[in-house]
Image (tube, rainbow, N blue to C red; front, top):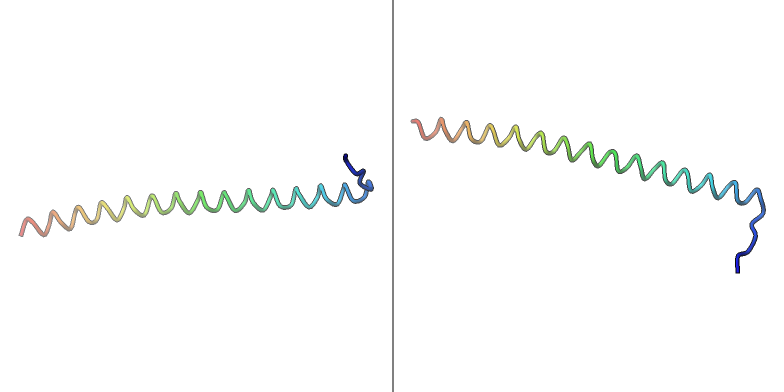
Length: 59
């Protein structure tokens, strides 16, 4: 059985849920951006490691 909410309570609850959804969405976007930055940094670092190994072996 569903208990009817007061209309004001429904509006406040809906705003609360939207705020949580917005915050979670921003957090996910931040995590995705960090992951992309980590991927780019890993590629650069891997390239540098390969270059240094190559120079070391050529000595």
